[in-house]
Length: 173
Image (cartoon, rainbow, N blue to C red; front, side, top):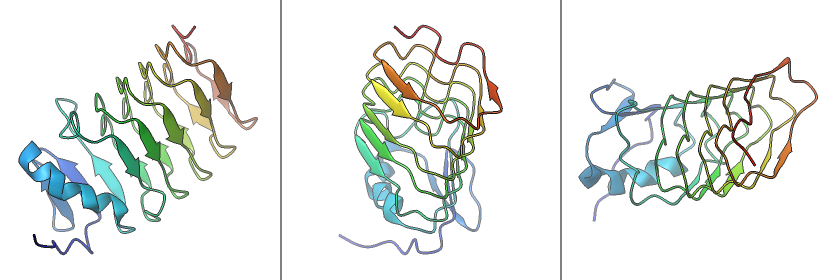
């Protein structure tokens, strides 16, 4: 076994994007080594293409609560993955379009104060999610955030919302 020096990684990209401060994951072969990055406080952004996700089969839980510099989860970052639980940090400001869409096993999402924006369909079709508490800091929840979350029976919303998007909870029972 060996250790990668990832102490200066600021952005994690999936696919063909890379930068001097980022790390690129192109295959499932590299994904197991990559999981340890989630414990680092230096990651500021997670980016993934809409065409696929390296976490699809094996990653069940992510704890980002200590990633104090993480401000954004990019569009489709964890879409369709096998996630059951995700704990997010206080500094996270935005969850991108379809970020957790079709995470059918997702049962718990730990959203924290500091979060301001939930983009379109960010939790759409998370069919095992039964409850969600949106932090008071959230000001904008875009269309279809929880559309198709058929097990969702309890949602706590902040009073500071500037606009309640149409079909926010569409197709929920």
